[in-house]
Image (cartoon, rainbow, N blue to C red; front, side, top):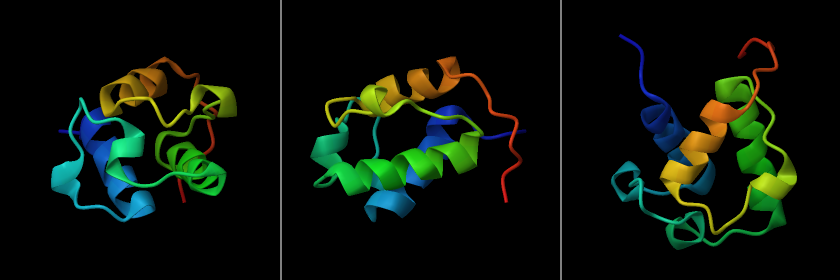
Amino acid sequence: MGRTTLERLGSVLEAVLRIPRTSVVPAACLDELAPLDSLSLAELASALDLEFEIQVPGEDLRTSLTVSQLAALIEASPRTGKPSP
């Protein structure tokens, strides 16, 4: 059985933001999890592209998003069709 979007997103956030997986909860805002700047958001967008085969528009990726809102954005994003490495 495959992992859910939230589970996969949690792994991405843990790796990119260098935070404990236990702190990634659906109601947490991204800016509450770790300090974020434009470079951090670019790294996150790139990691999401690789993990989910999507492209999240930069204007949609905001620090005020909650983890669950980001998961919904991922699920609504069209797939790029690029295979994950």
